[in-house]
Length: 75
Image (cartoon, rainbow, N blue to C red; front, side):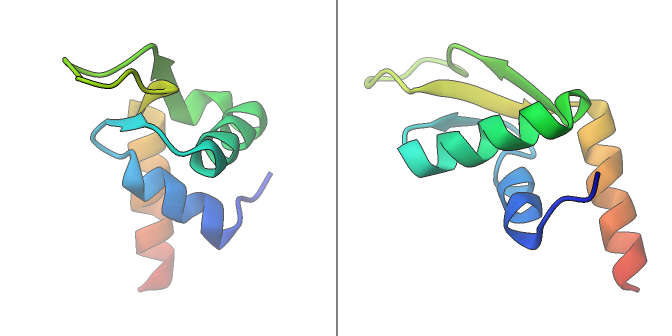
């Protein structure tokens, strides 16, 4: 299933790992994970934080490959 440009933008934001605090961003990431679970790894948080995030997310190896393929298709 193809992802929208908004969803691909969300993937770029979590490419190297990010703690998610925004509810809308969390919903977008969860929606992507439901469609393509192999692209995203979620955890309770990434690294130490002073404020507890909704969750932490990072792209899997397959997710980084997916972004590379999207970039190659633009050329």
